[in-house]
Image (cartoon, rainbow, N blue to C red; front, side):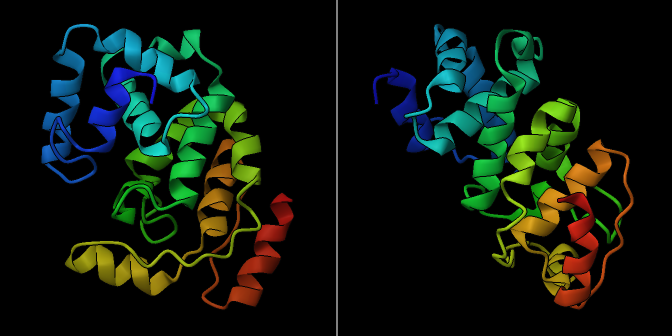
Amino acid sequence: MSNPLTNKLVTDAYGPAFVWPQHDMMIERVWSEPGNPAQLEALIDDKNAPLKARLIAAEVLFKHDFAFLDRHDDGEVARIYAGALANHVVPAANVWGLLWINDRVGDFGGRFIMLGDAAAPALRSLLDDRTVVDWYEGSEAATLGNGARYRIRDFAAYYLARITNQKIAFHADFAARDAELAKLQ
């Protein structure tokens, strides 16, 4: 890990990442340490850095320096989020939204929407991933989200449909859902 900040982010040296409300405090600690903003920018572009470190870097920059998108490839930022979703980098699926249940994309899912068309290739790369996401937390969110048996491909399709202004319906049956998702491919 060539970036000195990387190890700190991966080991939660600033506090727990992706556990709320500690996550928000961690974001503030990372941003406020001298020299970190430049290192965060370097992490966005370092494809060899651990995905967790790159995702935290993106989240800190989204919160404190939204203009970082002007200095980096939006498609690469989308690939960071797509990788995080596909590789279960965040312990709870809540930040990816409840999708069709309440028509919410979630905080992290919303990043794809903000990135718009630049996120489409990263999302399309997830359309074949049939991994079931059963890692929602909390009583109601866990019951609803885990009960929907969303797959990675469902998240990708939902965000992609929002970006491209298409309507796709949710079906509890995987075969019917897959037929609906095929409209996006």
